[in-house]
Image (cartoon, rainbow, N blue to C red; front, top):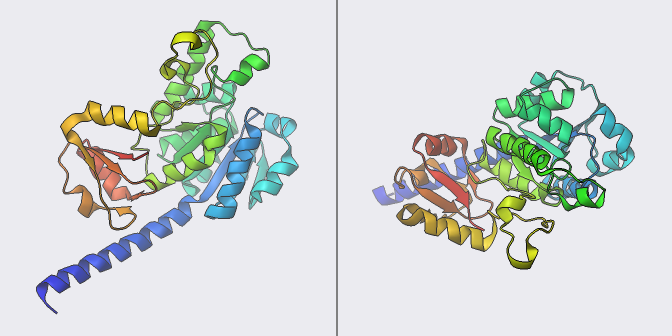
Length: 303
C-alpha cells in the first residue's frame, strides 16, 4: 500500500469512527424530557410534531406535566401520541438536577407566561421552571414553543387579550432572556424541526435562534402597519441568508462535505472569526463546537 493510499485509508477510517460516535450521541439526544406547562395555545401542532419525531426519528419521551397543564390539556391524547416511558404530574420521580443530568434534550411544547417569567428571572420555584432552568445551566438542548407566552401571537387578540405596549415589551424581554440563556425558541408547528436542529449541534446552538412571533423584527410596512403580525421567522429562509452573507463579507465560507459530519479536520482549514455555512442536517461534533467558540467562529445551517 502506497503512502497516499494509507493516508486515504486512515482518513476513511477516521470518518467512519466519527460517524459512529455521532450516531451514538444522537441516540442519547433523542431520549427527550418533555415538559408541559398550562397553556393550550398551539397544543395540537406541537403534539403532532412530537408524534412525528417519535414515529419517524426514533425519539423516546419522559413527560412532566404541571398541575395546571394536567387540568387544562387532554392527558390521554398526550399519552397516546407520545407513548412515554415515564409520566409525571407536578412532581417528577427524580429531582430536577437528576433529570437534567440524565437527559440532554428538554422539549417544552407549551411554555406559559408564568413559567417563562420564572425562568427569565432565574427562579427555580416550580418543578417545571426548575427543570428548564437547570437544563439551561447545564447547556442542554432546551427547545420551547412560545405560542403561549408571546404577546405578539395573534391568538391572544382573538381570545380577548388587549395588553398595553409596556406589558407586551416586558413579555418580549422574558423571551429574549430565555434566548440569551441558550434556549431554542420556536412555534409549536416548528417544534420538531427545531428539535432536530438543536440535537445536531451537540451543544448550545451556534446558529441563530428563531425569533418567533417577533413583531418588531418582522418589519411591517405599508398597509400592514398597525396590524397584528402573522407568524414570521425573519432570520430564516433565503432572504435572511442572503442578508447575513452580505453583511459578513469576506469572512463567509460555504462548507462542502463528503458526508454529514463537520469535524475537527474541517474546521482547521478556516480562519478565526469566520462564518461557515454548512448543509442542512449536518452533524456538528462537540469538539468542533468548542473549537468554534474558542476561535470566535460562527457555524450556521444553510436555508
